[in-house]
Length: 203
Image (cartoon, rainbow, N blue to C red):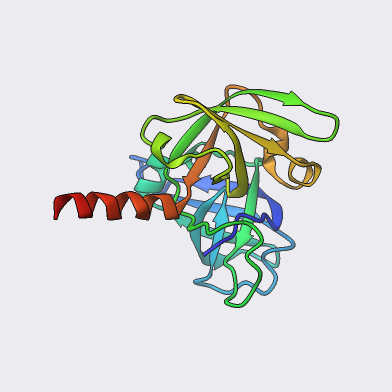
């Protein structure tokens, strides 16, 4: 489990596709803060996607496999060497829940429509995928590229968030430009509520 509090912006070293059909990939990332002390088999969220460390490449880099479903649903397949990525290690039991419950199971992507700088913050507006619309609520939680954020406004087709100075500096959201896409994970509690209501309706 993660909380959406990014620990470090890592840098992509390579994205390799073992087969010609590009169905799966191996992602190598350098992360001087996150990698030391990390062991094989541990989980790291990369732009909000939970990946398993399969190899440690030197002192400051790790390798993770990216499966076909992940390539289909997320932006990881479009990464190139030199790209920055948000990184968060899995939470320890008993640690603070500073963001919200984030599973690292991305539900889809959203397009940035616009960003409006404020005196010390930026307001961002995204297109809201229709399949995810029921799970997004004003003042509710959402994870964008693995960053825990509060939804400031929501319409039938768009939603907004505001980024504080720390988020602008410490995550890739500070450099996101209109037209770019980003990984989205909606609040898992909303998904369970929907499932419970659906099951109850069938009884």
